[in-house]
Image (cartoon, rainbow, N blue to C red; front, side, top):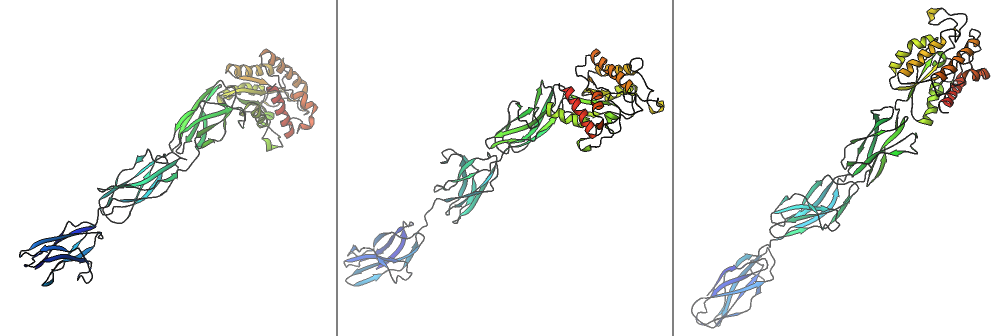
Length: 493
């Protein structure tokens, strides 16, 4: 009599087969038949075991190994003696599926910018509740690293995607990373992958100077570090191209991704300047556009229609001598402005009457270019309704007094007056005899008022170059160019 009992000690690769045999008084041997066929149409056998010749049931067992995990096996006990062979009922057992640690795969990084990137990977929990994360840093071996927060990956048996976005990275920098996962069985780490953030130069803007005085100013700019640690400074000087320049101290701007304003005050300067902001990081250096400013050393030209620029037949370089002179001064001394406050038909008396309002109109201007006299010398006298005075001699008349009033007002305002000779005229309605006397007054006032710029010799020049007079009074385009050059020569001597 034989009985097949349940298998015990079942693992992923084996188990113990159990049964019982009663020899019924005859010498008996027993074994097990086992296999994957439910009917054991084909099977393997365990070695024979002697069961003796008693008359009671005895337990019998055999261990089998090398089985396939997660597989159902069938078995039965069998016995044999001189009376024959007998086999028990067929039972089954299923080998277990072993618990596995997770599998972790590192995939390429995506969405890489100047300061961020998305890390990617895949994790197979292999049937056990699993968490995943990324390890990343600048060490090629990740001997030191930062870790992203854990992410639950469930307990499935297929690979699941996992990703995380890093921010605040340094631009133009190489980083290393790998996916990692852990469950109760163990920890797995993927291979190390690499990516580099985008390298971007700082973005620099040069803003308008502020707090401008006669000897100083505040330079302003803005820098976007674009993710790399950046310093900023200014280059400044009198060269329009900044071929030669001075520099302000470096300022740390940080490594953000927004525009950071920066400024620097400079002093001890004598004229208008050119400047630009500069930003530098490990990626490289970037310069802002060159801007300019005047320190208030600007000019105001006052006089009659010749100052206005009447009859200028070459407007390409501006109307009158003022734009041409400004260009010449800019190349020599730096940025400047020359305001034109000439009024057609005016005399020295009109100039004396209007100087206070002109001074108030230009509080930062430093120099006044003064030229009256052509209308003072008009003959015969012009009706006063036109705002002019009759022919007026220099010393016996009011010309000297009017000019001194203008000079005194300019000096009292803390400005610097520069006088010009009254130009020669071939107009029969103008008295050159009076103009010569006016110019003698100009020479005297130049000396008595300690004016250090010699009046430009417009009278002698136009007498020698009458072809540069359009109507015998007003210069033509070439004449205004000559006036600008004569003024420039006087101002820069």
